[in-house]
Image (cartoon, rainbow, N blue to C red; front, side, top):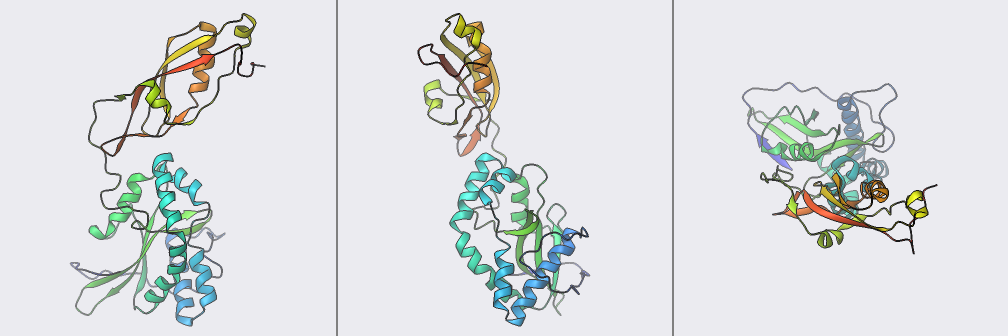
Length: 299
């Protein structure tokens, strides 16, 4: 928790002359306060509750730092594959984190210092202590923003002591806390994989066992009318997250081809790993049209 970081000169930090904020992990203010202001205010509320011995308020604030609907959020923020792994780790540690967070505020409340909030994209300190922020940014999809919160004190020796409060992000209108170690992450997590010459070749039967979502084709009305059945074979490239990246027809009746393409385009697979890293897959898929038990006709 406590670390000593040597800096070349004193750093002037903004103080926290802010009132306590009612409610748990308060939602963003209607006035549109900045993330820095809101996180300082949130921390001020938690520290004030800890110093006052208001356990009910402290637990309320701490519980509000937990992520609701975390499975959906992790998948949206980090992609299907990474999001599923992170959500599983978060679930496994949820109860412990929920009970421990009041202790974090109590520990910080005994220290002297000022709350400092920084966007992890523009860190004030670039030391090894910032690895969690870099890992989160490396893995995130889209415009997810993360903030590091610390309690800082300039010592009489000229050293700047940092007590880490964690990393925060906005989820469903309120700031929630992330703990990289609790999520099973380390400094090298999500590092770019070694270059691979291209998709790896996997047999159709082997790849079929890895399917997660399979959409049945809609039997073309004209093909049913003409009593046409058979198999459409497709050449497929599956991306690193298990989605369909590229499709082309190898063989099959022309009246059945488009229905097969439309269906397979919606399929998803478990990502394929090579040396622990997800890779693209080159495979074939057979889509079978049978008149004895056809899919629903196209209206």
